[in-house]
Amino acid sequence: MFQRFMLLVLFVLILAACGETASTTSTTETTVPPTTESQGAVTDTTSTDLRKVTLALSFTPNVQFAPYYVAAAKGYYAEAGLDVAFDYNFENDVTQRAATWPASQVEFATTSGTSVLLARQQGLPVKTVLTLYQQFPVVFFSKANVALASPQDLKGKSIGIPGRFGESYYALLALLYAENLQESDLNVQEIGFTQAQAVLEDKVQVATGYGMNEPVLLRQQGQEANVLRVADVFPLAANGIAVSEQLIAQEPDLVRGFVQASLRGLQDTLDDPEAAFAISVEQVPEAQLGDPDFQRQVLQESLPYWYSDQTTTEGLGYTDLETWQQTAELMLAAELLTGPMNVEDGFTNEFIK
Image (tube, helix red, strand yellow):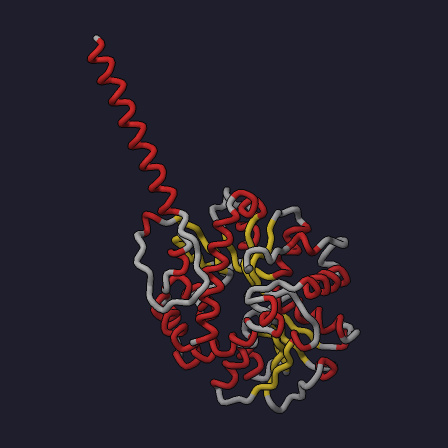
């Protein structure tokens, strides 16, 4: 009896020791700290060792997401212990999906500051943790024979917008607000997502679009384009990465790892756009559709919007309080917000440091 009892005790002790070793090994494998220096080699990390997370992208596969593709291809996410799945959407609910983690199973989403403010007004606990576009990317554009030197040149002209929603509509509201204009001063037409074609065919004189897209399409058709940047007239909180407050509270290291890896991808993209373009095409074969020269130009035109004077002092990904305050001021005046709100609750810069 005594011998059997001692054998049983020894067996239990061995099991406990094995369990402790396995637990320690698992923790070590899944908490690889992110590094800050850029590297060109792709990290070979077994996917089973990584935490699977989802990045909900608010558009179809596109070279404008190059910083995230670079971070994935060069292994920066893997070094942070993450296996990032890109979830493409042509929809407006990515902000809500991030806000409702963990039920939604979406940890991160690309969305604008305006969308975050609207979501928070509805009680959704979501925050911006990285601002990719340091300058609001929507522009007004026209053919070269249509004057477009200032917002006052819009008076009396036909202006095409996709609809009364989204960033293009907010761009229109911003110009009206900044210049003390009324919509009745313009001939605003809802034309869907046909802006470049509508201008090319003279269906409208001016249209709104993204600075790295529609004006480039015009030039590809042999037309010189006049461009009026909304960012030069009024600051609006632009696109970045948003997460739920619950994720920040429960897993701040996960958020920091993702943000730091994304910033490394962004820096590499700024340093070598041609290499970033090649990675984007390799990562997303859909980017090869159409004219590669056009896609390359889209990426090139995106770069200035990701960088500003403040990024030299505050760092890439910085979210500016004054820009958010002015954005909220406009949205309140346009009755998009029902009342004043503390915009500082809508973002944090703690993870870009």
